[in-house]
Image (tube, rainbow, N blue to C red; front, side, top):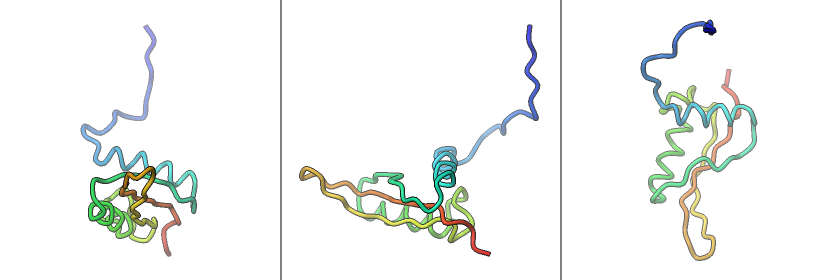
Length: 92
């Protein structure tokens, strides 16, 4: 039997795993806009963008480290409410 040594077990419960994965991808491509979410309504897309900009979602902290906007995009007569974001770095 082979034993695999590690630094320690993962936390019992990880918060915002979905957002942590998004943040890692955005940080790997700084200053590049990415379509990160599609929401049911324009209000929900705008709210998500605001939460990202303000750092209210801890994965996106501190406030200002990420830029985010919401847009309604119409393709083939179908409206999509899209959240776009990019990592710009923490302000000092």
